Length: 168
Image 1 (cartoon, one colour):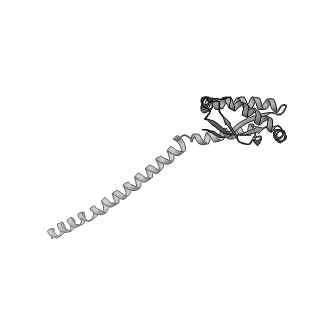
Image 2 (cartoon, one colour):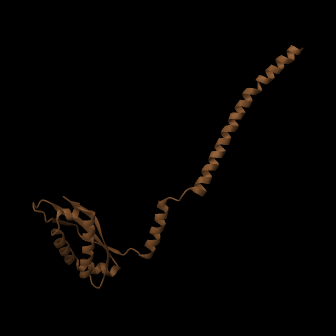
Image 3 (tube, one colour):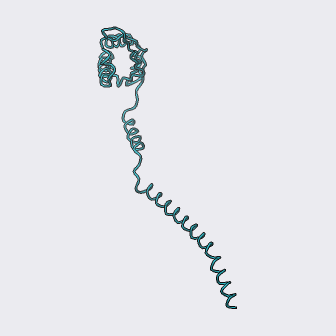
């Protein structure tokens, strides 16, 4: 009888081991998932910084509220030869101007030949090196803005946009 009890005890001790090991690993896996999920939640809510894109978008919206976009008037594209000793380079540029009010657009349409003449005269006096650098393009924009405002007086041009700029 003692042998039977020892045999039953041996069987009883062997059977629970696989179940208890399996339950242990399942519980361990669930615990790791819960801790990992909680850690991710805490990090994303409390520790992570907001993306810079959202901050920039908010500040850009605030800036746009202060200065609304004015009326846009597009000039015909310009194709001019650059002041190059070999005479083989040309510039194709398309310019759009931002005006303060819609009435200024009507005036811009009337003085468009003057604006075009001024742009052509200025661009043909430039060399390849002057037009290719970012600083050169900014200088061209600033100079055009100043000259356009002289022609458009008393109306004012807010900004100039190059919508196409090709040098070949």
